[in-house]
Amino acid sequence: MPESAEKQSWLNRTVLGVGLTSLFSDWSHETATAVLPAFLAAIGAGPAWLGAIEGVADGLSSFAKLIAGHYTDRLKSRKPLAVSGYAFTALCTASFGLATHAYQILLGRVGAWLGRGVRSPARKALLAADVPPSAYGRAYGLERLMDTLGAIVGPLSALWLLEATGHSYRKVFFWTLLPGLVAVACFWLLVRERLVPSRSKRSFFPGLKALPIPFRRLLLGVGIFGAGDFSHSLLILYASRMLAPRYGVAGAASLAVGLYTLHNVFYAGSAYLSGWLSDHVPGRKAVLAAGYALAGVTAILLCTGTRSLPLLVMIFLLAGLSIGTEEALEDSLSAELVPQEQHGMAFGTLAAVNAVGDFVSSLLVGSLWSAFNVQTAFTASAILFFAGSLLILRLRTSS
Image 1 (cartoon, helix red, strand yellow):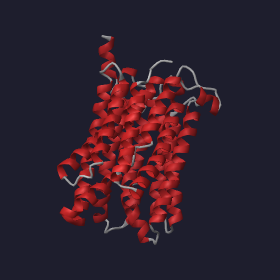
Image 2 (image 1 turned 90 degrees about the vertical axis):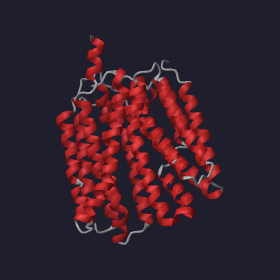
Image 3 (image 1 turned 90 degrees about the horizontal axis):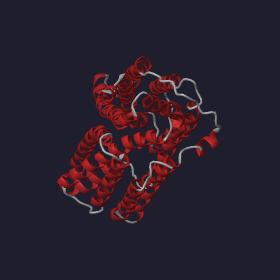
Image 4 (image 1 turned 45 degrees about the vertical axis):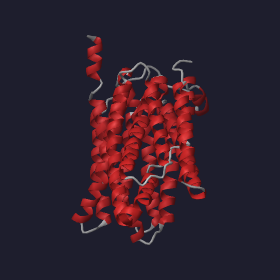
């Protein structure tokens, strides 16, 4: 009976609240992101501004996750911090509609992404506190699934809104406030805060050193994998170039976007399915290692320089499966390896390691592709992917 009750209890109001919050919040900022490049061009800002805006915002967001992770472990209540982060992101995203210069967009994006950074460790810690450890995979997998659905609906909403508003970018930005505030309401009304038996009183660096050894070994595997984990927007570029000789530039671009949509569908589905699987097999780490290995297979297929549409479909499908597995399992395995009173620091540190990996991989894969060729770039990724998979398989879940 207790086991049955546990199985029924994981899909509770907190899991539902976090999932709905992720859906509406991602819906909000992905709608804005979809029209941001065109809006910047309309106010006279070029690609350099877009790169600066995204780079600065992402960097500060990662820093905020690390610091917020430390402080959320010291707070008596994590929920107000998460709610304020979601509210700040919604307001800053909608503020794009008031901008007349690129620096104002930069300030708004930085504010929005700082809000994302502040709320992330608190949200993940609150989710872990209200779910049985045996259901971490399903809980974090469902959250990733809902988040990805928001990322799919957001650009579609942007297209519809542009038509409905006579291509008014400002009205689209103001509209993002609606799903953004719905996200705030979902978190505030549905997510419960469970009392943690003890709160951390350590300062920042002692808190980092106190993280369990198995978790630090997990971070090593995540970091090695992340150094090769290229942005999946590169897949769009790859498909566009490979299909252009046969389908023309415009046709290849349309097919590439269609393939990326397929990628996102499999990304969403695999996040939950891999999480569910990890809750029903003896070793959760094996599912994460398999996800890393799938990424390695994807990189090997990319090395072929294929122009075959069916093989490109397979590549995008595998890429979606691997990223969904990666994100759901890194969170659930981290929650499993670290005591609840250190969850904030753990999730903040994990985010920082992933951010460093994103930076390194962007430089590595892009540089190798430009300086040499596709084969060299993705061979390097494949080596790092399989090395990360091996490190995860060798991970011991106790000190």
